[in-house]
Image (cartoon, rainbow, N blue to C red; front, side, top):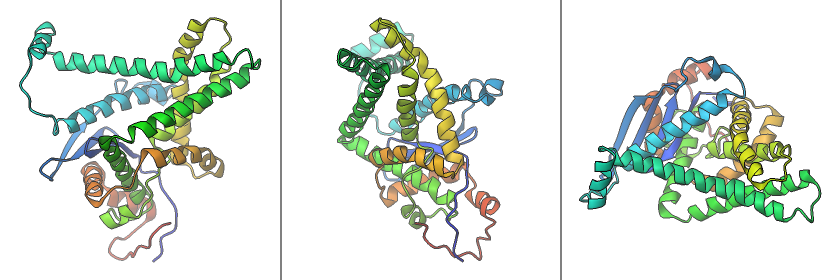
Length: 325
C-alpha cells in the first residue's frame, strides 16, 4: 500500500544537545545522550511553564513571549544535563572554593547566570548595536528610513549567517548540527506516517518548518518591519527601543512559526522556504548511531504508533511503506 505524501501535526518538538537529543511532548520531556561508553542514557522529566494555566498562554502574539522564555530555560537545562556526562573530573581550585564560599555553595549557578548575561550582552552587540551603527553610517547617503531599516536587517541576517558558518567549523558544533538533523528526521518520519526505524528516519528530511532556526529567521525579518517605526535622533534611544521591541517581535514570530508547523497552505510554505534554506546550515546528516539516540528520545515520551493510527488510520500489521520523497 502506497502512503500518500501528507503530514500531520504531532505536537512534539525538541533540540539537539551535547551528544544527544531532547524531545518534548506537552509537559513531558526526555533527554537521550550517547554516553562515553557508547550506551544511550535516557532521562524523562516534566517541565511546567512558569505561567502554566494562565490565560496569557492562550492570547495570540502574547503567548509566544512566554513560550520562548520557557524554551530557553528547558533548553539550557537539557544542555547542562547532557554536558554532565562529558565534564572532566578535575580537582577544585582555590578560585572555585572561594566562589563557593562567597555564594554559599552556589558557585556553579552564579557562573551559569554570569555566562548567560554575557551571552545576551554579546547578542545585543552583534545583532542590534553593530547593524544599527553600520546602517547609521550610511545615513548621509540614504535619506529613506525604510531603506536604512532594510539594509540594517540585511546586515543583521548576514552577521547571523556568518556566525553560524564560523561556529560550524568547531568539531563539537559539527556533531551538534548532526544531532539537530537527527531530531528533525525523527519528527518528519513519524509525521509522514513512517514507522520510527533507523532506515525510515535516515531517508526522512532533515528540514522541518517548526525549527528554531526558522524562528530566528522570522525574528530577523519581522524586526526589519517593526524597526522602521523607530524615529529618533538619539543613538541610545534607538538601541533601547530595539531591545524593548524584542518581546513583541518574538510574539509575532512565534505565531508565524506556529502557523507554518500546522499548515500546508502554499503561501505559508513559501514563507517557510527561507527558514528551510537556513536549516541547511544548522543541520547535517546524522549517522545511524545518532538516529538511534533520536529514536530513543522520541519513544521515551511519545506513543508514535497510537499517533499514526489516529492521524493516518494505519494497521501496522498490514501496511507496507514506500519512501516519501
